[in-house]
Image 1 (cartoon, rainbow, N blue to C red):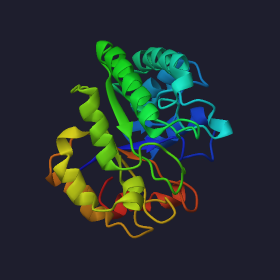
Image 2: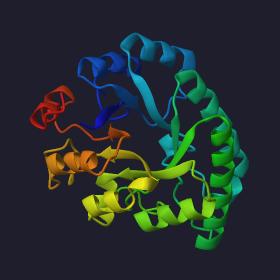
Image 3: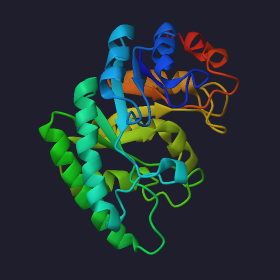
Image 4: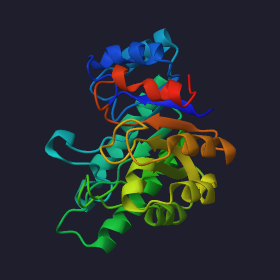
Length: 260
């Protein structure tokens, strides 16, 4: 059975952030992830994890001004110093939270920057981040995101993500495979997971269309979750979906798919 982590940026949002840990634990989740921890002291989050028995599975490097629409700065030539400071901040949080894996949102390419320049800066930044994270004993993942939801996102398919892994050239960096995003961009989910299993460090899920809970759309989640088991995936699966009618009302899929 897959190890499921509740994404607290999307689930249990009826509650204040610090109250979502208890709700996730009571719902049967064993791990949690979220976009960012940086608005809260790391020791306070760590106390919530300890009190609820949850494992911190993943969070993202700082990604610029999220409220203003920024979705990462790793491909921005004029933000290198800010990116590198963010790596240090993420490591500090990860060490307090016992988090063994951090994701990088590479960002939307600035209009005035060429693809070649954005790619060069991105590879350099990823190499720097990976070196720092590996030295701290923290794994690194990068994510491809669909350009329907985030127009202009610089890494939007499996081919480019895997190419970046090759160019960074380290076993510590792997691919965060988001089923929803890649269903939108390329489909062929089961084969892609199996073919690239050795390069996948984390999986996230949501159904399509709507990015709601499994069972609300076109994806055959009973098959896909069993497929992950069958091909030997032993990592976490992050539940990064938007509940269609509230979190609690949408948790029935866990029992329907025999996951609790």
